[in-house]
Image 1 (cartoon, rainbow, N blue to C red):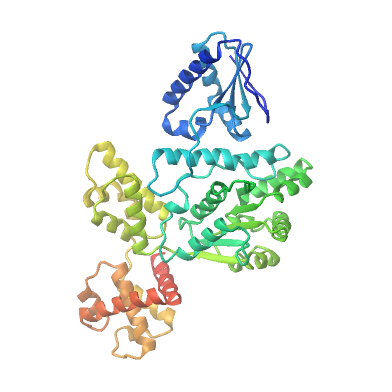
Image 2 (cartoon, rainbow, N blue to C red; image 1 turned 60 degrees about the vertical axis):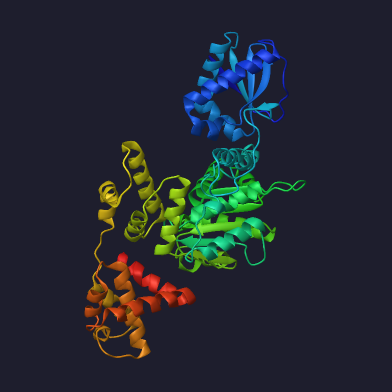
Length: 495
């Protein structure tokens, strides 16, 4: 069985010599149903949903896909099976020709892009279709010349603005990302630089911006072309262009986009030639009024190893950081994930996970997914006991015991007071406030009771500790600088 593939930008429906049009359509319906059954619903929606019947000519059947990227993927992963299934339906078929084009009868009707976090299965499939079509189509147009722009990336259907759980640590970054998605190249927001630790939501926001730009299309307005790639991919494409003596095409292709998105920019540290190329691309796009969105693990000023001129340019727009999550935000994330999975998780379990896994949202979500899978496989309810049993390895890794003495020492060093002031009777503000912070952190990071904590701070009453915890929590809500200070101490103690 031969599988023949050709690139074609204009494909017409052809007359059938293998079977009458109605018979051919019936065969196609049976082939696609069998293919869907074999590969499963998820793969079908991701890769095969946009297949449509082109027609037949001689012993050749034509099927169509909207982009070059999809055509190549289906060719390499499903082409042989598609040919075998069709020959089983009609032994006169000798060749399946997969082309780029639009057919009269797609596998499924077009549907609207996702509208809410609690979307239906149809909505989820729609997101995948947009990723395969809209995003990859933008890359295909340039890949015809040179692989200088885009890499056919498929956006994750989970990563939209609707599914991003917003809390105080990430609300500013979320607002900035939403603004750029709604109004690219807004004054003061170009470039947009997102930074934060691992698993705090940078990639989620990057994908969400790309989704919004691609799905918010107005009639009569040309679609936005988006190039989204990692810094590593940018470097590899630049090297390939040098090797193939096609740097002019690389530059032209990359600078023809409306929005350039580069993830994990810190990868360019130490790559001087690639940094220089990115700098010139950056300037060309900004000067042309095009939007740039960049993410990294540190702020521009802290990315030592990047050229000064590049760090300065990156910091001239909007810089937004994603702080480490708070307990309340972690609870909200877990509740949202559990609701989306339609799984009932006891509040005690959610609180336990939010207390134990504090550094990484991905690890937190992974722990919940593991619990849900275990419950479904073994038909056991999710309880605190089963949680400790199933997640024992994760919990053990996070079970670093922080002592009250360690908290007192770290806070005293941070605020430049004497360690003995933690247990003294002094009430001066420069001493009382750090003491309250230490009590707050002792309550957050240890399992000690309020009376036990009070005894460590000069035999103070438990009501004094309660007041300190409440006071610090209130100050953190009203003073972002103070909140960052306390959060920094917490991260240092947990690291």
